[in-house]
Image (tube, rainbow, N blue to C red; front, side):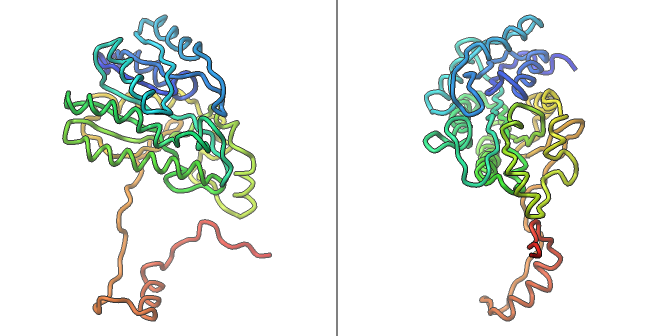
Length: 311
C-alpha cells in the first residue's frame, strides 16, 4: 500500500537504529517527508555521533524518499522545540510525531544517567512531553495531527525486576491517554505502542531481572509468547507497518488506545475499567461486613502473580 502518507511530514525520534530506523524508512517509502532524530548516543546515554541519523537519511534518499537528519536531544524543552522547528524549517509543516525512547530496562532501584531513568536527567515521560507539547501547538492550529508514543508491557501490566522502567513506561501510556482526550477535539489522535523486538536494548536488560522472576516463581510477560529469550528473534522492522497505519488517514478514528505489537501479531490492549464492585447500604463499611463480601465476591478467584514460595 504505497503512498499512504503522501504529503505528510513526520518526526521520528530515536530513529537512527532499531525500531525507529524501520519506522522512518517505511514512512518515507509510504510518501512522508521524515525528520530522522537521533543524537547517536550509546545505550547508557553517553557519547554523540551525528552520522547515526545521517546514515538513515542517506538510505531513505537512496531509495527515492525525502528526509533530513536532526541530532537535537529530547531531554529539554528547548531541544523538543528545535526538533519540531526542524520539520517546519525543512518541510513547512508537521503532521506526525513518533516518539521512541531507547530506554534499557533496569532492575528495581538501579538507575543510570542518560537514555533511561537517570538521576539528573528527565524521565522518559517528560522527554516525550518536550516534543508533544510543541507539536500539539501546531496540531491544534491546523486541526489535525498524529501522536504515536512507545510504552512497554512492563509499564502496562508490570514485570518483576523492572521497577524504574515499568514506572516510566506506564507514565508514557498515561500521558498518551491525556493527550488523546485534550487534543481529540482538534482532530488529533494519540496512541501508544508496546513493542517486542530484538534491538541493542535487549542486551542492556540485566540478567538479574530474569533471575529475580525465576527465583521468585514469577512468570515473565511472555505467558502468551514473546518472552525474554524469544525477543532475540523478533525483527525490529516488524513494528513499522502498524505505526504507519496509525499515522495514516485509515486510523483517523483511533484515539487513546494502546497496542501490543510484535512479530506477526498486533493486539489491542484493554483499557482500565471497573470490573466488579461491592457496596454497603449503611454508607460506611464495617470491617467484618467488608471482609466477608470482598473475600466472597470482589477478590474471589484472583490469582497471585507472585505467590509466596515454600522454604
